[in-house]
Amino acid sequence: MRRIAFVLILLAAIAGLHACAADAPTNPGPGPSPGPGSALQIQLVTSDANPPSGTCTLIQATATVNGVNVPDGSSVNFSTDFGAFGQNGLPLVSVVTNNGVAVTALCGPSAGQARVRATATIGGNTGAATIVISFQPSNNTLPFVSSCSPSFGPKEGGTVLTLNGGRFFGNVSTTRVQFTVNGVTKDGIVQSVTQNQIVVLTPGFPEFSSPGLLTQVTVSLGTNQVPPTVLSLPSCFAYGTQDAGTPQVSSLLPSSGTSEGGTRVTIVGSGFSVGGGVQVFFGALEATVVSVSFNQVVVLSPLQVGQPTPVTVTVKNIASGAVSNGVTYVYTEPMIITGFNNNVQPLGGPFLPMTIFGRGFEAPVAVDLAGWAAIIQSVSATEIVVVPGPALSAGCADITGPISITNLNTGSSVQDGSFTYLVVKPIISSVVPNAGPGGTGVSITGFNLPDNLPDTEVKFGTQTALVTSASTTVITVTAPTSNLAPPTCTGANPAGTLQTAATVDVSVTDRETTCAVVAAQAFQEQLPCVLPPTPTP
Image 1 (cartoon, rainbow, N blue to C red):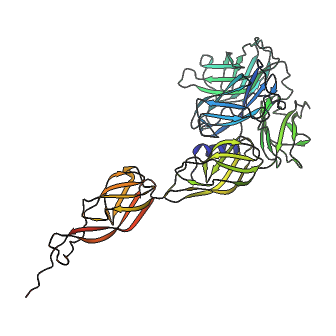
Image 2: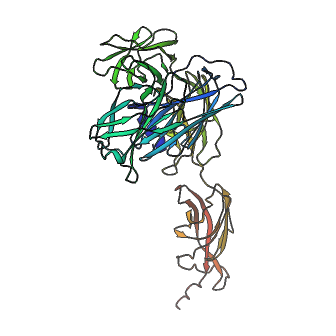
């Protein structure tokens, strides 16, 4: 079954989220509505800032007012200048918050750089944040950054920062390293470039009063080329005084998953011990560590027995024994579909909203109906409202398939029931006139007839008629000339009298859908009759 391309690559991305992530501290529980004059802040984090083209990456926005989460159900609007969002296949999407967090997935159809902007207006206050996602060509010859040393430095700048990696190219004059803090971007001073290292002197941000400032580092290689190669490092370096050897967690992506465990969670932060190894605990339960890098740890959440509850996630560097700050992870119940309505709808629309009932639902989700992506209208814990998306039929057969829901945060999915796109087939109600010679104008009336002239085919028996106009209710044609032998005059008819040579079927076919309808024995082909031969005496 064919599906919309973005949903295909979205599910593939969920199955194997990896690589760098960005800055967004996990927030405390939901607080009261913001009052006038309060400061609305939005911070962004991504599961992969440099994903391969043709895949998707998760983006999480955390919205706070004076350090307190915005109320649940607040809208965060995401926009992008490249690619589209997984929920609707469009460059704009609105997602409501849960515990101050709204999550979407950005999909890149090809290599290119996307600037994703998140905005929200709550209680008369507006906040915004931007993150850069660089979709890379799908090959193994691209430059990459594996670690940053050190991970921290004073906000006055002057830290000698080494970016370790591989396949770097160019020199000091063709390499640019930029640092972005709270929307302010400054250039670092590139000191040296080798194949495996870039050394840069960090700029200062003394204008900010916060003791800790996580920065997005953007590396542009080959600035003399069009386009240059761009790498985004959303949490490679932070301004502050924290010891780089102490693990620090800024966010979890996703920050929730089912109590069945096995959810792939990216822990974003710094100070993680790559050589000495780490342990990750969800409450008292130890998670399975999949990978460790300079700024993230990827784990599989452990099984939680009993009623789903929030737990505190911590990271421990095994060699030093240093333990990170705690960040909340919420266990949820597994998704179950218990019912639905409007699950049979016409292929060409108009489409009615469809409600899927169940439990364990949590935005953002992707919904497939018979293998085709639906448009999400609303998500609650027990109901999802969608509108069927456009689908294409391979022929005149109806499209029937399961109803599938995928949680974009966790990758968990559920499938149940069925949805049918009905192919609306044409109907012939009358053929007028129902008799005549070739060249007679004939009106075929009915319902759901093809209304595109080039796609309309009409036959009288095996002969194709000339179609002169077409609509969904009336098709006008010129009857074809019969290829039959003239009939013998009957009764007292003189030669040349029009008589029925044959009674034929009239068929209408929509070339685009291949749907056809036949009016059996609906037209009498008439020809001038000929006198019978004179008997020989």
